[in-house]
Image (tube, rainbow, N blue to C red; front, side, top):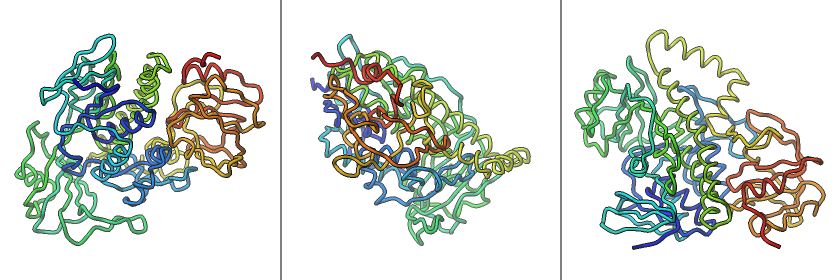
Length: 499
């Protein structure tokens, strides 16, 4: 039997990000992944939103993704593009980058952190007790772990075996997505038919002046809504041909499929993100249509919320009750994503009433304040955890300020690279004493000259100190009179060390 402090089922973006977070905290973590390699058949997600890029920047690895992707304005609602280029963030854009590249880069980072990945096998069952979980693998071996995290997709065996309910809406429509060769050249881009959306584009492309320019040759990526709801079986080339003919009047001589997949508009969310020593994240916790590109983003940010909390519980720094805040904070975020995608699916329709509604939404979102509100929501920049109402910053993402310190200029995000919490003192140097937590929390004395501004929220009152969690969210804010620092440190980072 192999032992690890944490075992993660699934080595997609969520599982990889969670493994990296735990490894940074010094936790013995391992991934079990059914694929023999990191190779991914199919395109899946096509990019990263602003907040996800910020999260990667907090870990010092954003440049790895930016160097391979194409910056573009990707935020949108119901097909209506939302420009965030005027948002107060270093990353006021999205990144066009296929999921296979995202996973490859994440896997490289996780490899540098020496996380073992058990490939070519998967979790087939488990039994938990008061001290840990015995995990059964498909190769007949077993593992013993303190905690098991299911990052194993929408059909998650971990979620099902844990007995976690997965309520939501059944599918009403289905789409085919594929990478194929075509004898005829289709009209590139996104189009609409009587029963939904279809699009064509080559796998290779560039963003030029904010527009997609496709390569002259190579496989064609296809998305098409099926006229009738498709079966649960694996789709065939014949299914794709029939769907294209129904939508476009021709199948463009489609042939030589590299892969074909089907997805639906089902939207479901786990009733609980934890059951005892078993937790779930990413698609295992929530599934919804791909409208708005929120799935991968939500999963990666699940991992960043959970990682430091689970690490502290494993190391005995914090009580197990800290894990309850994972569900409390992340469940509402995914619930909002489900709501957005369900609304977007309705607005795909091509009947006259839906067109009128979509035109109305487009007109509304062209106005400045609605644009800012929806764009911040869709890009993840407005996430607000309910940590109280003492200050506008509380529970929100910490902006990446350019600080002046005794050691020279420093960015806030650079101080989060090792995933350590931070008390940022912007008042009198030496005015705050956190000696009982000094082994866990870094104290930074600094100055910042400038306005504090957050997307959608606008200008906020400048604090004299902020306590920043490893995931980049503000856990405590001080002005000249506000108490409660010791309580906040204990709540989030465990009781004070004995003198």
